[in-house]
Image (tube, rainbow, N blue to C red; front, side, top):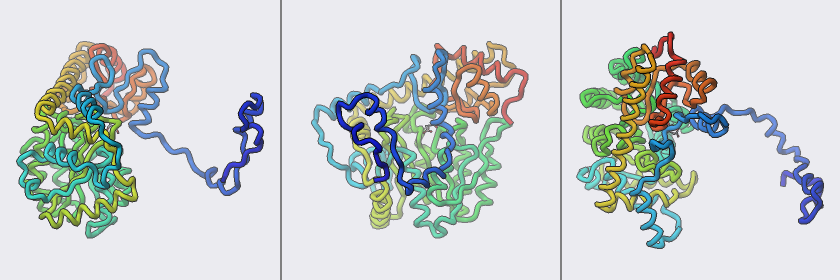
Length: 440
Ligand code: LMR
């Protein structure tokens, strides 16, 4: 016991207020002195800003920091299909037993069909190893660990992340022990894909490196490769014997059609890549807090799949034992019922459509406010974010002077924009960008 109470009386029920207050005064054992040496860590680049938003008392505060869907009224939305599934689960009186280490089999089966397609040959051949994970973050972490353990160069392996990428990718891969590198992704002058830079970096990387690709709705840029560019990327990666980790956090948010958004995943599987897929149901099912996702590994045959599964379980068991079941039951119930699944696809499309309307409105209102910048990229980009080209100083002014909370890389979560705040956001963005250049 490290903490010694100085006043036992103070712990007794009914002690006078003065004594009760003193029960918090403790003498600490010297063994705990190492804690004094611990430095204050920096806040998270995304969730730290969300915490600042919550702490702000400004009446006009706006949260466009976190990639989480909001309705036009600015509130979170529980999809009606998800509510219906929850009611069915409750009515069925399901128990609260542990899931197996690899998660709920039904859920994983539906999740795989959602990503790879119902007619996927590799699924039918039983050669996709797949486990339930703690959403996409957990899937990426397990993937990093798997690469560290089993790639021939182990922790010496370079993992190439797009520049820019979701901020958390960097520590996830670093914590898994891999060497984190970057490949060119965004051309900041055109706000489009730097395909030449990307292909040159694929070519220059040591053979057998890992390339992390965003399957669709790239976070934070909203810039995805075209079909032809995906083809060129696939070819270049195959030629170098690189491994691919696809991170799919926004299936359904790019085009509004979850099937169409899976096309890069399906192409890379068909092209025969060394492929891992991290899948999240946070955004497209609105199951943020349920932490529900999968990690899958494309294997050569069913026997290889069994061996891979055994190792994935050995990674998971000492890390968190087994995943939570509620979110997985919901996804399973929705995708396992033809009518509910159809309803779900419509609801997902409606979220993407509202975000697209807000892109158009934001650009229109910026232009109407008198901004002379070219804001076409806001409507060209897809998915949840607008990567505006604003620098950190502009973002700081938006927060300090206008109470608009966003990440300091200039990313706006368009899901946080609505018809009630779009004029305010546009006027504020115009205020901090007028007379200054944006982008590169
Ligand atoms: C985001 O990029 O805002 C989301 O993916 C939330 C998160 O965990 O960072």
